[in-house]
Image (cartoon, rainbow, N blue to C red; front, side, top):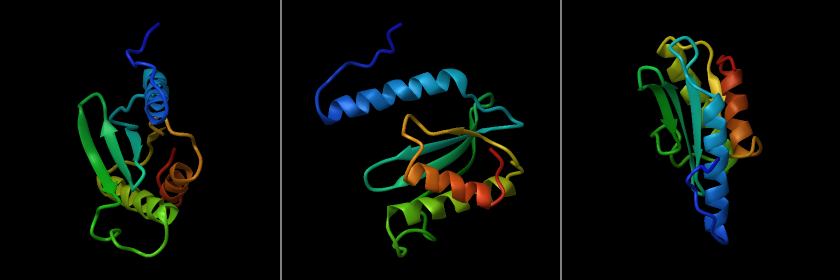
Length: 127
């Protein structure tokens, strides 16, 4: 079954492979009102997280490395990811979300992705 992602070379191949992985994950992972989806988007410069109810098509909470409380902070990208994870968990709890389904967005569960997830768990969000 074709996923509609062309095979390329170099960095484009990596992006295409990540897109295929994300499509495979999204076949199985979906957010509901009781348990929305925590989506992580990683770039070379930063990281963003959103809590989405897929049935209604609404974003319930979000956080980014560009938020005023995080931007320009001390530490590296993993520290930024931890701050984003704690912030999105805090905002999700304020929106009444207790548990989420984790969508790593085709990225490996390591490094910044794992740091964000661990920080969200420590802040009280259940996976």
